[in-house]
Length: 391
Image 1 (spheres, rainbow, N blue to C red):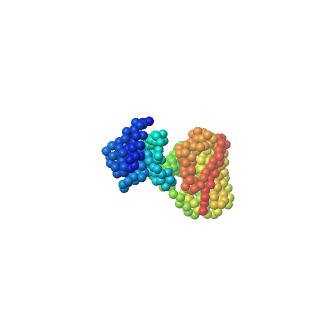
Image 2 (spheres, rainbow, N blue to C red):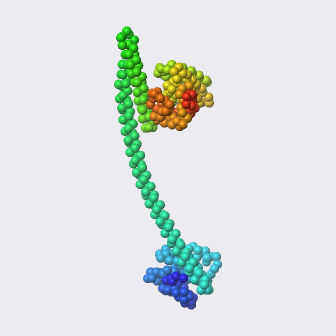
Image 3 (cartoon, one colour):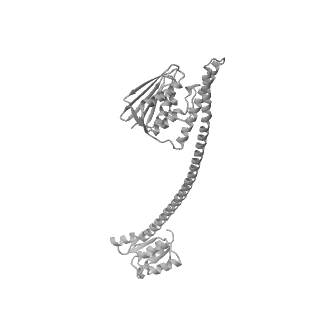
């Protein structure tokens, strides 16, 4: 057994002497014998003990339990109680001070040594546990501080990114708006050239050919700028749902007329309307983007003199529209990327396009709280189905 510096606190001289001799026989050093709690604390101030043997019933103002509470708080030294009572009330008082062990009087040497070893072992493990707990708390505190610092840096980075995003959006919008005016002038000039070329002119054929090229290029560039402006608003979260009541026939006729005006493949567009009310309530700007882009793509990727079916029906306050073509279709392995910005399938060949149309459709459908699905097979056409809630 490890030799310890022990303080005996016992108000019975005979019991104290017997205990002292028993402990010294096991090579422990007795630093003092105190008859009261006050005396015990004075001795501890002079020479701290490694273990205290504490009688519960002491003379003076401090009994053994109160003295132990002070020792626990001030010196953090293991205490072994000495008591002649083993009743439940006494044991509950003892347990409240978290003793390292207790010995019932009269004690024997073997039991005493066992309780001392238990007390030292318990104290050692409790201190190891406390040390681990302190280290864990320190790690948690440090990790929390690191996390708070990381959050601050993240907020700064996000704020910087937001500022850069806003600046980029403003630049894109300003540049795009700046392009639209000269493009309008170029388009007007190209159309005038076509009018002039209709008269007898030695270069009539070439004038018509090149003016149409100019017109088509301007329209394509204008569509691209419109798409860029759209995503500028989308990235700035400025696309709002603004419903209004509109005449359905007039709306769909306008969309189809615009698509047909740019149809240079002589593609037929067949329409079917089922249970469609005379008027509907929704955001016509967003609906226009959805149907104009889907129908334009259907025509663009159809074969010459191909066929597009456009069907619309309303049921249970849901507008269901399908656009089916017999064109080049979409390879199955690329369909997961179909609505990504600037994505174009590998089989589009030299067909012009920005890869933004379907991204715009997807965003508009989301704002309209609808859904869009596609069924397609390479070389066998595509069918897009749009479901949009309407009032």
